[in-house]
Length: 156
Image (cartoon, rainbow, N blue to C red; front, side, top):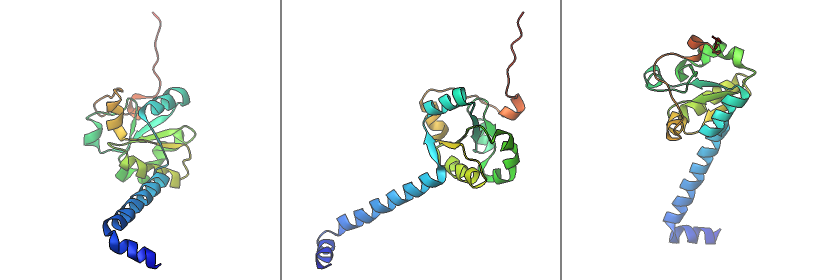
């Protein structure tokens, strides 16, 4: 114990840095547990294309209309718990939650998991990471529920 006190006395900045780094690691670990599994944009496209995943965008409407993932369902984080019924029909499908940077969507993943949704993922880095990966976005208010989920092509 005496050696520890001597070390702290001789190297106070190292000791403070140890606590800061330990705190940051603990915070990151707790956030990861709450936010579930984070997927990179390319992994999300695979979930959408191969596993029929639904994307839920939890940003505010003003952010959503500036650009969102095509066919995403818009439910702002502040109203998510009150609108879980809109997601019931997607309970058996993978749900990918997105926001601007991945922070709000991590909270939304926690809410969904707390309410029994099991196959829920966070878009790591949010819509910013999606756009940085040069993946398509669409603008306006249309969401999956308004557009429908199927596209029918008639043969001439």
